[in-house]
Length: 82
Image (cartoon, rainbow, N blue to C red):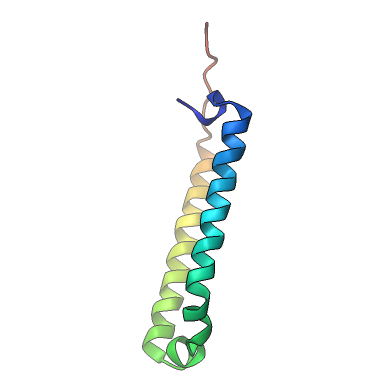
C-alpha cells in the first residue's frame, strides 16, 4: 500500500505523530546536548576534526553521485493500466 492510498486524515495524523515524537525526543535530549563542550570535543581535537571532514566529504560525494545518476538515468514512469 502506498501512502497516497490512505485517507487524508490518516496521513495528517501520521505526520503529526512523527512531529510530536521529534519534539519529545528533543525535549529529553536537549539538556545533554546543551551541557557538552562541543568545541573542545570536535573542533580542537585534530582526530575528531579530521573524521568530521572525511564524513562531510563522503556525504557530498554520495549526494553528488546520486544527483549525477538521477540526471543521467532518470526514472521511467510506467502508466498504470486499469
